Length: 121
Image (tube, rainbow, N blue to C red; front, side, top):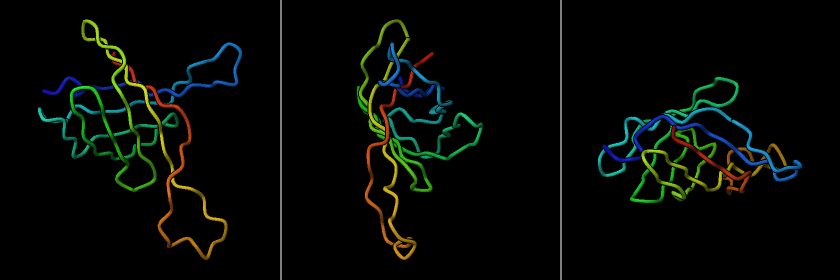
């Protein structure tokens, strides 16, 4: 089992708050990740309880995940690993919004939306 193959708490950082605050956004289920770090079908449950299927790849200390509906992806780096407690910090990307409805079928570039943090436990 890969060390990232667990259920994770999903957070963002509100840098405008004083003091800076962590905001819980839901859960990420990576329990089906194989020994080589491949995730073919995990689940991201957002703060509203809505489930989104995800897939991705991890190595020793980095991870990339994507929503299977192509409405977002995450890139992260392991920053804390002690006694089974893990923290990954990175970025969450979402598709750029189209200016006109005529562009709805064109591929959209991704823009960084917010900092991304996941913690185990």
